[in-house]
Image (cartoon, rainbow, N blue to C red):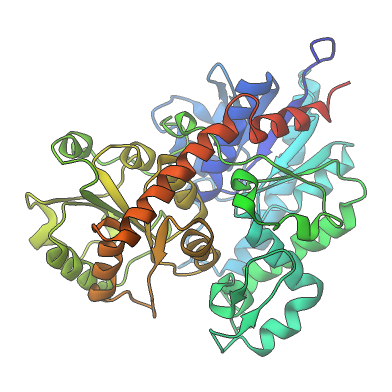
Length: 465
């Protein structure tokens, strides 16, 4: 491969933390592992927040590994605010502005002698395929959710839509997709079962429908599709069920050292000394609670968690955004047994010896980070792909439990989950054993000669001489 010029991969990423993190991790791993040239691009607003301490970062810069060049989506100053514009109008403006400016970015890179070989794009950016194609550039979808979720969406848009819609109001109705473990309606991504024909859920479902329509259209021309599939989907045949229709390269999760960089955070890290606080706690004793960067917690939910923490009598580290704080937090915020922070380095926390359980919404990034660090989970899914991820955690990998949630998880249900994961019973010991086993598998897969490493090398090989 040294006889041929290295390919140049341009990552185009939607401006959400849950999209930026996995894309940036893959970009770093790709550059480090294969020697490929990598440029990373998201919107100016998100870029500024990622590099708030870097002067004149709007012009782009190189950190010695990756070049960062932002593009304008027309919302450079404040980003998208739902209170001022509905999502449909935003998507329309975001699309038209971003298409124009990403196209200019591709031209500028070619003009300066750094032509792009392949554009890697994330979910909600299917328009990238067209502008890349217009310039004769290959494009690759980086699927940033579980391979099982990709297969579910694929089957929904290819024969299962009527069945699922007909039984959307029956949470226990069984659904059997080819190659997947038996599921129920309650396990499916939330966008597939909502009744609304307008609003957030409908808009995102329309965007996903367009994505899969484009994948169908482009399949014969596409070289591959990168899928963020963890450890060959841990023994399931999720990708095998669509292998005749979609060419996929499972690249797995990425080594946790790529998650410790400050670059990529859209939120400022809390200045409280939470890592030093963790150092004072016994191994496996701390409950870590975080429901992601997007969700806003209801007051009732906060009250139930406070009740559960008091009853469990276990030390805790709880992440609650500054704009989501309620008075219920005051009585436990500064106690000796716990700490409440606005933001933290999640991987550093999960990798700490004191953390024994992760109470999580089961977003895919959080799920994978917990798996890689060997921390068992109590899943509290809310929407999008979270219910399916919680199903995988409990039923496939056995490294956690899924809580029964009807809008709000009750305090007693959370206490039950904590005891199942952190207790001394046979089931608790087995959950912790399986969490450790998944950590070992993750390390093996991303190491040199592992399945994920070999697949990345194969991806680069497709675009060299």
